[in-house]
Every structure is written in C-alpha cells, then in structure tokens.
Length: 48
Image: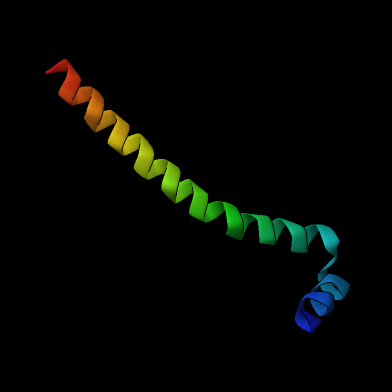
C-alpha cells in the first residue's frame, strides 16, 4: 500500500489509475479473444 501511495505522489492519480486499469483489462481481452476464436470455430462447423 505504501508503494501505491508513493506512486500517486510521484506520478499523479490519473497515471496510476490508468496503469491499474490497463493491467486489469489485459486479462479480460485475452479471454475475449479466446471466446471469439471459439465462436468462429462453432460457426464454421454449423456452416459445414
């Protein structure tokens, strides 16, 4: 927690929040990519 407070003091609140959100969203984007790939495969099977 002390490190986070030091970062906020040094770099500013918007930068710290943006970095936190980017880290959190990265995992969700990976899951979304996998889901889209699986959906495309399912559609290809249905069309065949």
